[in-house]
Length: 405
Ligand code: SF4
Image (cartoon, rainbow, N blue to C red):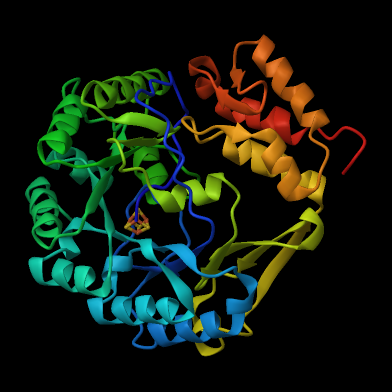
């Protein structure tokens, strides 16, 4: 659906009060269908019409694995691929199936959608099914940029999609922007951000265009059919996007995520907070907390046909993380949440693990000015400088093994 790649980070320009609304458990449904492949995308997707049995297969997998999750869940997210490639009926069926196992009354139910799929009728059906957040893969409102990205929609369709979701009464509407596109003018990002704000968009995910090996874009550039990416211009573009988003009232609460007050994605924060989630569908990931602080990560193998014929027994990979390892991951992920940061002692208690090796790594990062602590050393956050080097700080945390595994 989106490039779903995090940008390189940059000046953290967060503003406003930190809001720590985190789901305690969630469900993710991976919808692998796309109508065509965007040339920059290297996701494992299926270019075909959605199978009629998809929702029933999700319900079957859910029934078999429901005991893995603490219920009720307070977030349900449909990602992909392209969830909007499914008709609204199967979306409603899947929401009902999850609700039957226990969804909190105020649960966030989010769905990624491509603008060309969104009509007033479809958006109203999503709303009737309980969808509370739609994230539109707009990427840009400018046709030249969309043409470079090989997207199926044009700027006018993106505006109509925003309007349709609003008129349907979907409470939270977000969009993705891809920046650093070679054909964009110096004014393009400013115009896109202004348009998002003018349309009343509450959440913007800004991604940097990256060139992935083996993609059609790589081949197009190699044969001179598309302009190449320029590292310096891209870094500038990302910083400009960050600054402009903040100028327009969006607070940066994650490396790539910007939100108006109260518009943060609860489901995204669930991942960063290392809370349990049940991933359904081919290629979906799950995280399960085991007694004693260990964590079980599961990755459904991304083979749609195998999964469709036997959703409860399709191949998957399990990895158990010992408590110390699980704690390092929880901290490395948690630092992505620029506004909330991490409560080291709280996480260490949840994982029954010794926080001292990680604390030493965080102190070293603090000495470099990359993290700051407050609440007497309880809560750690990336600083503006640290947000720029978020991957390096995460690597240091992951390497802070001490004597334990
Ligand atoms: S819509 Fe495009 S970018 Fe999104 S998953 Fe499908 S092919 Fe990839």
